[in-house]
Length: 152
Image (cartoon, rainbow, N blue to C red; front, side, top):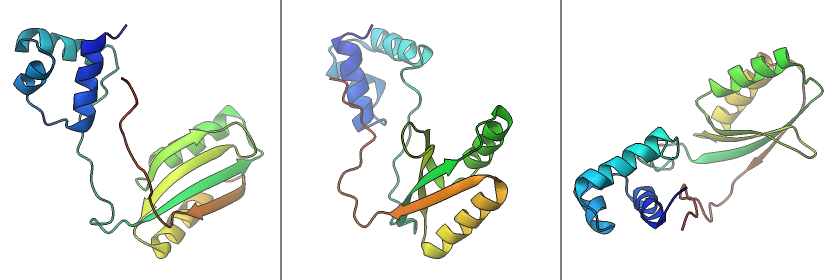
């Protein structure tokens, strides 16, 4: 169970993972040792999964975001394992979900441009037989994007 201090630490780290142990401890009114122990427990419990830098895709030449919806008639464990292996090895895929509803899978894909998306699409459909419908929508404007969970 997370207490207020744990939630505050997680909130601070979501905003700036480069904060020093001392800065984190000061922000939650602890000394560094108990603060470190809390962080270690949050990591050991699988709550704190990692500390990363967020990059601007536009400035890296990766300005096209596609949302790809997929239908398939294949649901065997062998097909599923093959599909998951192929998709998770594609670096353009930033998010991948199995869905309930009209479509079976949803992917968030980040590429440089339409040519690179077409290359991605061809690799995908040629690597996994049995994709009966692959529908893509392209983001025109990013209105909100965050990696911060509403934990407070």
